[in-house]
Amino acid sequence: MEMTNTVNANEDFFKSKVLGHPAGLFVLFFTEMWERFSFYGMRVLLVNFLTMAIVGVDNPGWGWSAENAGALFGTYAGLLYLTPILGGLIADKFTGYRRAVIIGAGVMTLGHAFMAVETEFSLYFGLALLVIGTGFFKPNITSIISEMYEGKPDKKDGAYTIFYMGVNAGAFFGMMLCGYLAEKIGWSWGFGLAGIFMLLGTLQFWLAKPLFGKVGGVPDKELEEKHKQEEESKGVSHKTNPFTLFDKILVVASAAIGFIYLINDPLSRIADINLFPVVMPFDFRGEPFSGPIGMALIGLALFLVLVISRISRYTKIVRDRLIAVIIFAFFTVFFFMAFEQGASSLIIFARDNVDRVLEGSAASIFNVVNAILTVVPLAIITWVLSLLWKQTFGRIPGSNLVLGLCFAGIWGLVIWMLVREFTAETTEITVSWFSILNSFFIIVFASFFSKWWESKYNPSAAFKYCFGLVLLGLGFGLLAWGSSGIAEGAKVSMIWLILAYLLHTLGELCLSPLGLSYVSKLVPARMIAFMFGMWYLAIAIGNKLAGSLGGMIEEVTQEYDLSTFFLIFTIVPVAGGILVAVLNPVLKRLMHGIK
Image (tube, rainbow, N blue to C red; front, side, top):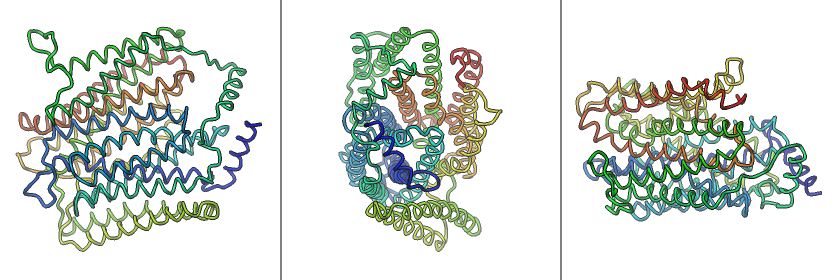
């Protein structure tokens, strides 16, 4: 009876459609859009704010070193990919997806509010709240879509594509508007704007509850057991590989060491409080070995023992496929190590080394291009809002009114920004403007890559990874070339940074969206959560390395030059891309027919 009720609920859900999909998908689209608006709006400001000079500038920051700012950002970004593992488990067992989304969004709203206060305590506490809130929000809003489209696999790819557009639309407008307010008016305005739209996004999702019925509700254990029995009757095994006591000890030990390392890095640099020994009790070739690095290596070794121990217990085909996932995860670390420079070293580069002041016809051309870039996508999304309004206003008027208020605010800010720039004598492009290029290029090129992957020219997984890593490296190669030979204090043309973001985005489209897809294809359903957790761990390590290495931009530039710094991020991804291409025959064998 309950199974029938769920099917009927989903059928009712699909009766109210917008662009061929249930209206509820677009409620999730806008919820994710405002969350990404807030997340990327704050993210693009953080390193710029922390490293901006205290005196001698119109909009002073905190004057931190790039190294300290990178350490804090890397820890924050790394934790963002670890808490969703816990948030997903809590939602699965206790709260349900919708309630977890509301909890996460509420906690993130508080986090943004603390960020706007601009004290040292409020900064750290705000970042902690954002990490916790993301853990609840990130995995569960996508889980609602998965439940919503249960029994309709043919519609799911299109649904996630639409949802992905919401992600990029939010990132685009968040970085543009929060960045503009922060850099032109004051940092608190940028941080505060991120919080306001997070609050409004939470409210519109909460008010849309009548539209969802039982979708995303509290888990029904009886229904889950029936699903499990049906799958087993079709030959899908749910036999588990239980964690032994030894496994559990390794999980706790490696997780504790990893977490303390993430916290210790900024804590030791900024507050001079070291949670690990300064040096290890053993030497390396007669030199003292760093305590934090030594502990990190011990944690990594324990984790590898755990992974090898668990994988060795599976049958050959399952074991081989899991090894393939681990290889892809290894290269994912190096991709994100370089790609996430967009939130650290490239922010500092854009601020200090790129010529961003335009006059005369150059300023006019930029303002026209910027207006088109902003107004056209905003008009398209507003049109989608009008379609949603027509379909659902009778059932969820409060949610629609909040969305209407959001868009009125966005239009007001956009018009104010454009008028202000068109009437200015000179145009100084904001540092954050360059970061919107990633979202813009994704929107432009995503459909091309989607069609390529569905064509007969679809390359193997290894070559997709190769293309992604090599394109990313070439983007940094352009920056190394553009910045070579420039005198200290000189600035380069912004065309180098624009072209670099283009190549970085093309690399991202080759690699990033495919990672989770391959995990879901290669990993048995009974251990999907563990391997997704491992995948997010690889991204977390990449983000932490990105922050730490990005913080070295000042040190490397002073000792060598700016070109040398970018060459590091050219050589490592390109070498990784060549290596993964060489491993293509091995990976094909390990994947056992999965494409």
